[in-house]
Image (cartoon, rainbow, N blue to C red):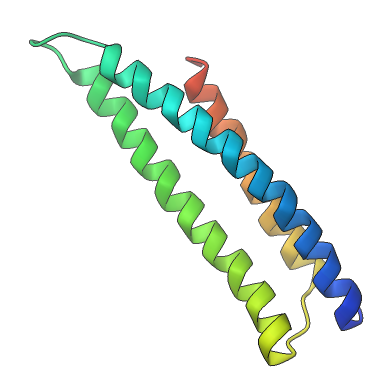
Length: 110
């Protein structure tokens, strides 16, 4: 079901604000992972460092792809009159939460 433009813009925009708040949390968790990576290992063994930095790179790729999809939806609606499917935008928000949970898990050493 497609909703009127005003509703479809407000709903994902509100969710994007929550994701933006989560982005700050994501950034802090990423910093914690990077710090842990730098503190790990020693001159002869940088395996944990390489593993954590590799996970960070994957998280960054996922975040960038997700943010791009969210931005495309909002820009399409605002500048091109495209309707936003609430299920699609909810799916993107859920994917963002899954990503945030994964980054927090790694940041907490899980």
